[in-house]
Image (cartoon, rainbow over the protein chains, first blue to last red):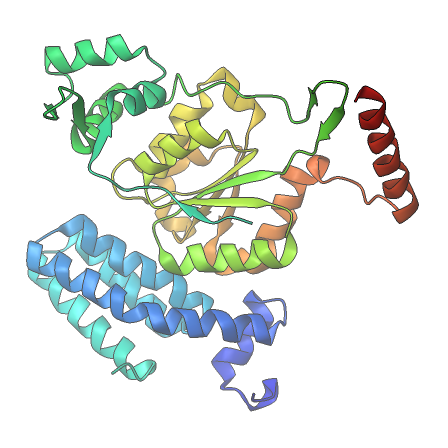
Amino acid sequence: MAAIDQLPAHEQEAIAVYFDGDAEFYRVFLASAVQQFPADLREGDAAVQAGDVQALRRAAHTLKGVLLTLGHADLSAFAKTVELAAQQAPWDEAVAGWRELSARLVAAFSLA
Amino acid sequence: MSNTEMSSSNYYTTLEVAKILGMAVRSVQLMVDRGDLQAWKTPGGHRRITRESLERWIQGSRAGVTGVASFTGHTGEIRGPGRRRAIVHVPRVLLIEDSSHFQNLVTMLVKQKFPAVDLHVANDGISGLVSFGHLQPDLIIVDILLPGIDGATMITGLRRHALFGNCKLIVLTSLDEDQRAPYAFALQGADVVHKPKLVSELPALIDKALGHLFAPAVSADEGADEALAADVEAAEAE
């Protein structure tokens, strides 16, 4: 297991700010989150397919919270824009935002 | 600790709905007959009420939990034939949260910090209400944004119930401050945890809510004395 000072800066910051310095607790939560992300993406995709605005909002909202907790502040902020788009913007804009968010999530966590 | 996910079935029995709404079974049957609730009947003639219609009715009345089962005391005592056995109250917590991520995080945290707590998880507002009636928890931890009945509406209903005074409440949310205005009516006076701060803030709030229920440590000698006294008492009764 990597020492804290060898972890990426955003992870070090998340451990310090959100996990009371408990790197092991962070690591376990990160592992569970990475396992869950594909299901999150499927939920969001299903919401898009169904034209379900509220479900798309919840999918983006969930990602916003977990991404910030894991230290991915930029990605979390983008998830918030998708969440707001699902509430306020034209549907096409929300869908485009969701697709962009999905692609960024896959890249950030090396999801297959 | 058990971690029970309540059913998210699309149908409820008449009895289940009666418990959720705090009504007599007959009243619920009449609601079905009047068309207030939608239902179908099994080949045996039992009503199965749709979750959607129940949800709609509760949201319409905004009084959805006025009749949940009454709370029992925190500790009790069973008197068997000649044997007295104290019941140790296990603090019971109900988490109502739809995100698997935060279900995991809260579960991990509770297991680590409060191993004596009996934690149950419900995935949405309706399952949460059912669980609330069944479990009579000491503490509920509620997410604001939930599918179906949202957490804010549920909290408002719960607060109007006199018996809810026995239950503590902690609200979880991923909403930033600028997004919370529509839910201010539910958040007023509640302990609110922004989800990213959950690990650092939730344990202290759980401790504040349940601290009085955590049994003080019993020394080995005291424990042995109590066990011996109980055995003597039981033997004398036989």
